[in-house]
Image (cartoon, rainbow, N blue to C red; front, side):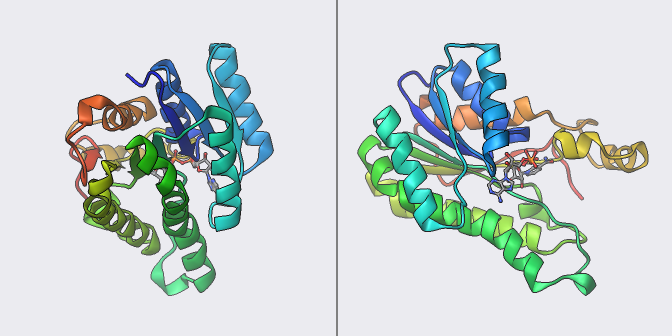
Length: 246
Ligand code: NAD
């Protein structure tokens, strides 16, 4: 589905991002994954190459809130693969700190990664995406629709991601650039796998499908939105959450 396409996936070293990278590679894209450290980037690439030595995948670890470092990394990708068709802004962190104990330091940490990085990568990628009539796909969250009872800046940051998604879809449509987001529900990444049974069971009751989603199921939504099957889909926040409500 992605033959001859070049993609960047931020936060591609583990969890949802890693499955997006795998799914894109399986569908014949060439992929650059961005992580936070050389060690985790190297490890992810080694494990992908172990799965299939013909996968065309490279990695970088820019500070995503630095425009200069993002510029350098994205231009290295284009130098290596010749162009950019798909930007996936997936790197993100969650937060559950009660408002009473919330600090400006935490505010900045969450906003830098979940919002500023999306802005930076999209801005730097824009000229390349204009050339290919490319696409941007952001990772939002179900909490961007319902909020959450503690950790206010996490949903606030994802509301901002939805705002950028819908607004850039309207602004960049004239270049043929599509901008969408995927809003996953609770997804079985390492963090969720390690939660105690007492926390998981009540959670399952809030999900009509009665189970947690897998990173592969979430990655399928990214594949759809990146592919020609979604050629007339833009400005969409696609929920992949088993109809969870909280
Ligand atoms: P994860 O913690 O398993 O992976 C996060 C990824 O982001 C890693 O690849 C990591 O290297 C990267 N990252 C973290 N901090 C970084 C930094 N400072 N600079 C660059 N990269 C950094 O998380 P995940 O669950 O796979 O989450 C991926 C995305 O999905 C996030 O945007 C998250 O908000 C969203 N999400 C996750 C869930 C869930 O239940 N897991 C639900 C809804 C939305």
